[in-house]
Length: 229
Image (cartoon, rainbow, N blue to C red; front, side, top):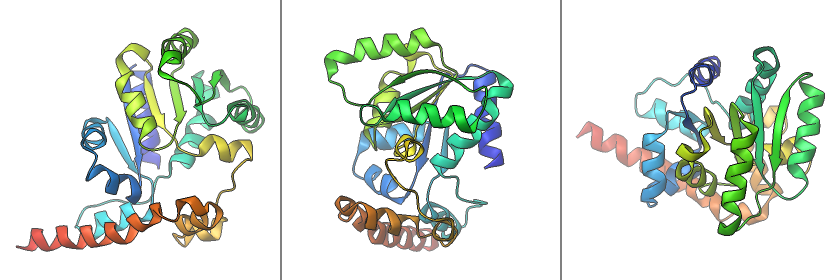
């Protein structure tokens, strides 16, 4: 986490205009058959391991990866630091009213924070020029987009140059959790690497998507066997 936060701070200081992705096993599995998403992940300035499965896979394949860096936790760390560095943040995504509630929560948790704009994630292609103009006018240093995977990554990547935001991150359900409309797993489940199970129980619609996890494990094992050969 400390390395990720430091890297993101460098990008903001240098006005790099970069995309950062938070990759869990489900996103990685999707990228195996979604060429556009795969290209975005390979081109992202930074991809953090948002999930115990990602960390396990790295270790299993012989790569060093100290710990999980959840997108929610990364966003909180960046917001905690933002007031002291006078960094401006824009919330984009979730259902109508959610970003406003998340803004109020951020202002409560991090006194002095500048949330310079909020916009819900319900829009059509016709709305996009207006949304882009709104974000550009707000001049954020950090854009947190909660549009869901892979929509948030594809949207941020497609509009990266015209937005001109130093750092953009797809943060999934972060705004929902901050607004109190979605619960996060208890700390003991997070530490036990069972947050995925909690989300599946809380959101039955995710059950089918959780089938990506055993497929992910099999893919990783197959990849390791190929390396041995």
